[in-house]
Image 1 (cartoon, rainbow, N blue to C red):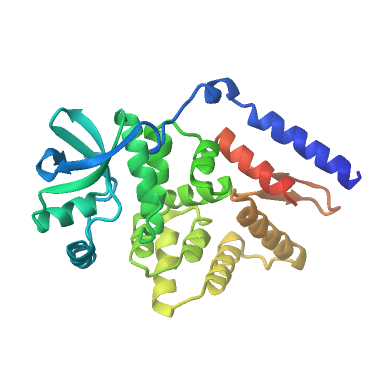
Image 2 (image 1 turned 180 degrees about the vertical axis):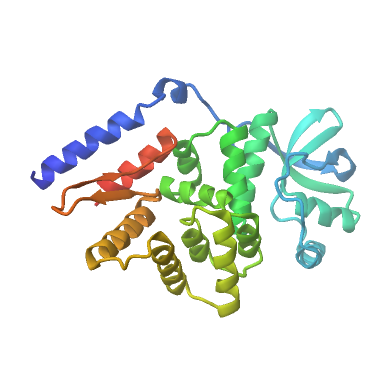
Length: 296
């Protein structure tokens, strides 16, 4: 098949897959912070915290630095709020600025008043939270999952709104399937995102925990971790020494699984005839797999 024909086939598949639930998707509409926005100053006492705030912990040192900055330069970026009543407004984004203003006992603060219902407010708060540079991978994953579950966003819609590849969204969501001990290690910077992705390929939770202990104790690199898991898998899989062909097949399976973001299965007979199976659990994951294949 020529390259031009491959491209046409690829376009056809992409068009077919993108039409899954197309009618329902086309009917969705999500207001943005720029819609129906009014800028003014409001008395600080009329503003209340955001009950949908994804971030529950605020770094005290960073908050103190913000207090010092605002005391010197004022609030440069207005706080985004929505109107609840004639004298009550609720924060959409900018709670740290609001907390700093309270510490400084400011009477008024600059705001952007935005029309937003509960769902729009939740979406905007989560999206704003994701853009923060200090989020750890698990916090990002949880925010992605909340946007999907609570705002009825598909992986494709979330990818578009965040400007990130759909495969990246899917990879972050897989972190939530890791054991609690691995998630905590990732949150506390004891392991890297690369380590977590490798451990995600281990089905048994108890084995994830054992490998995690080795990574931390022996300060293993991501590549060394891959070798450790591969070695353990070979030993536990069979008491018979694997042939070079079997070892190559296992290596290929691991590489394919990592590339596609799905646990690929490869089987073959002695004549070299076999099958490749790539499982998926949703239309979004199917799209991710096809996109990864067709991009090359």
